[in-house]
Length: 532
Ligand SMILES: [Zn+2]
Image 1 (cartoon, rainbow, N blue to C red):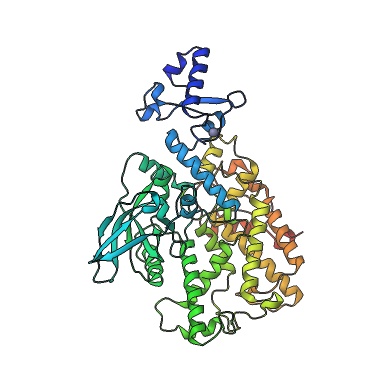
Image 2 (cartoon, rainbow, N blue to C red; image 1 turned 45 degrees about the horizontal axis):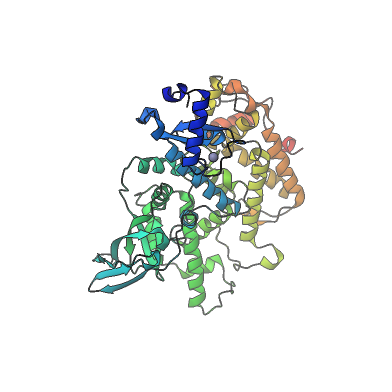
């Protein structure tokens, strides 16, 4: 498009004829989105499938027809990659519409996967199997390898998608569009270096590691994947191994929020074990966090950590949490304003009661809606929602994103950046959020001091907030948002250029001036004024 000598040389009639020809070859479908093109109604473009800059030819064999809109908003210059990413975006959106975390599960479901159980037998340390349900009765055999140290038995096999499932227990990770890099990599023809891991669970082959690479290849049209299949593995131990691999051993980039979710599983496992050990019914929660800590004293993993991480996970991944879709869980990409690490360091760590393990029963006052952990979870979700509603929804554009925002503003290339977007981006910078979140804590404490409620530093969110307190919090967030400095574009290269230390903004909020003397507020932030 635009740089094609071939297309530029065509007359209007010839261009029209080529459009018609491609449209027929493509079965009337857009190359990128795969939806119908109506040549009378939809504006279209002819574009190179493989871009000229990467060696694509400027002739008919390398042309495709797409909706003009699809071509404008394509996510990669290479149309095959763009098509894979457009398909993936659709799958992600479909999962999100159902309030589910998009994962390999959804990608398999959309590509004919996860239909059949694995039929196999083991004779003399050989695995024999057939994928008969796909119409292929070939008997295949694979060597079974035995690892003396771990006692794990594994085989390497190539499995059609129909026989593959996503392991939601060991790998609850979601996927997002940052998978684009992997799609590009595989499109180049580069191989998967670390193959996906799977386990046999009641005759189902479940992938528990390498799901991003699996997704990327499936989006490019792969119909079977090579996996290392664990034949008889202990799920608990695999969860632990996988968690440690990500955190302590640092073998793979592992996002912290997933460690939270795994610990969540570990926590519920311990609760079940406690009930079994004490002959309690599974709906009997008459024991406390302190009892659990006591009972599992000798354990390697700390039950205390499991409890807190479980709570963090329940809040972060709560389907009611409107802030969730603005949190970047992968630690890279530049679409979303809030990294999980920032979210954890500012809001979660400040407001979750992590120091005091509760000695009240797990179900204490649950029937009155006053259970401390449940209140803590629900009220923190409510706080997240206020932040999302007042600062982000309809204001922050993921399309504009965060990439080099302040540079663009400083250079005057900021036509597309709205005031609301700029304000949201700045307010959620870690060193800034870390400081304003303290005012929220202060205003809650002030409120309880006035009403005479007994609180301590740790349990603020475990006490039920009256409506008036919620109104105050919302007013504060709104007033914070409306401070002129967030929209001040002249500060892009100074105050907002680069990362400042936490204390920089502490000083700015307390005095109105930054440590280097720049006036950023007309007066210091006063929480009493800010709730009016
Ligand atoms: Zn299209």
